Image (cartoon, rainbow, N blue to C red; front, side, top):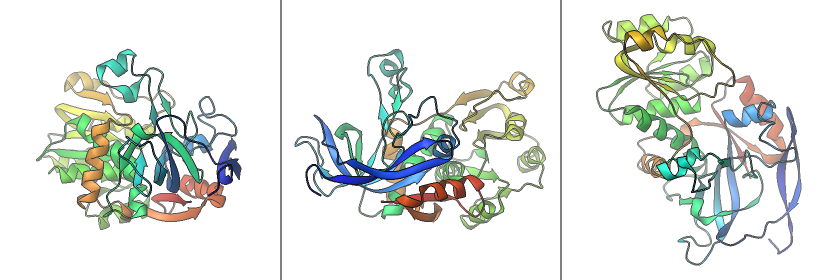
Length: 341
């Protein structure tokens, strides 16, 4: 790499169209590290971007990618990072002064910007990011697994918010990457877990991971009742974004149980609030992650408690980003697609 050189990047050009081209290699500013990007995961948010659902946030010509793994080229002297370090990026930009930030919820900052959504992200060969947003990746994790730390941090946050503990029964609606990771984190905490999923490829993968599944032909409410002796599960996670799951989610939970809404619902959905009243349920949303969730994710991955590499079903070069998005969107025999830079 030479100073003032160019690099490859992918640009969002509008619904269902990414273009690849070149940009000048960035010059890191004060407090920033320069990274050589290695892997960028494609997630549900990226698919919303691809379909044009987030055009109010993602500028035309914007560089996306927020599930990132790279290596440090250079970093500020006192940052704790040096050339060659393997790192993941906590892709958040927050003000530090608003009510949310002062409460300790900086990831829900009232003027939050997500790197790779609102501001440029990791789908470029080199990326300048604040060193304060970097975390070390242990050498025990391979590059593919490192690319899945960000979604695992989402899952550890979701499980922590829901207060899952040993002995709990947990039903996860949706066995995509986040739902599968939530199930694996719950199991690691000592909970009994089942996952409701309709995609046959994903059902097989869940079963190979040793996770019980509720398939498309089963009545999920009947399953929950049979599984718990008519009581209902302790905690249900809604990770599908599908109206049928939202309608069922309050019907599977016990008295004083918990419903966690993880999926992005862009439109209002009918939900059975009678059970909220009748069983005095707790319902909360769960979004993004705090720093402690990243640290927990890295610990779980590094110790092998959660096997991340198994989720990567395909690696693609940057030039095939559109194809990768279309494949992930079709949802056939695919779990996690990662871009190899």
